[in-house]
Length: 289
View: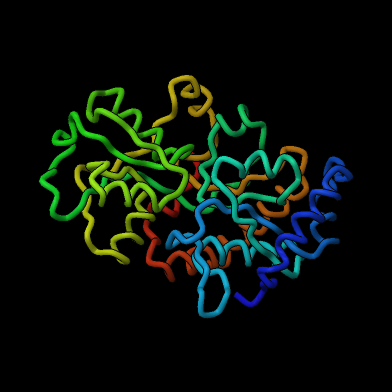
């Protein structure tokens, strides 16, 4: 975790990227990153354990995604790395505009983003599934108990997509979508929502930090939106796998990151990082079909 830059430099970096991005031609993205000497990733979930957060005592980023980013930067030949913290909804437009190089921010690879938003993804580095969480003292004991009630989730995520599937099935009445991962739990505690639909990694962190939540029902696999179902069936990844977003024209950068991920898999680095945060499981051994 020693490969970091001063957080105050991020504004200068983003400005520099905005100026130089127009000059980046096909397959020259990796060289541009190396010349700048910093690999910059957007992040829309900062503060969410076990993904990435800032240690206020040290001023450094921690979390399994931060460690994966550090490993990738090192393995593709870039000395430093940093985050551009932004809203979830701005991560893809900002990357396409050249404000940051990549997106490592708990983002699922899916065809809506690949075809609809016209970006590329690397091979996956983590696999998620959904859980429905309630307060420990909630009277809700089963999914059936949520009928007629409101659940909360995060805008633009597959968690939210699953929550809306629950609504379409009549299992819940309404879905409140928020921009950040902390806001659904604020809604839960204030009584605005009866439950939160989120991934199991986030649940693990919230349970450890707060201890006042529990799950109901069985874990849920991710389901594609109906309009993307055929395309998702043909995809190589398992829906629910996190991958790194890259500009479509940056195939050289995508290739270098994929090689770094393959090397991390071969030498056990990815597994070691996930074990450190107590999120390794057998499901993590299979990320593609």
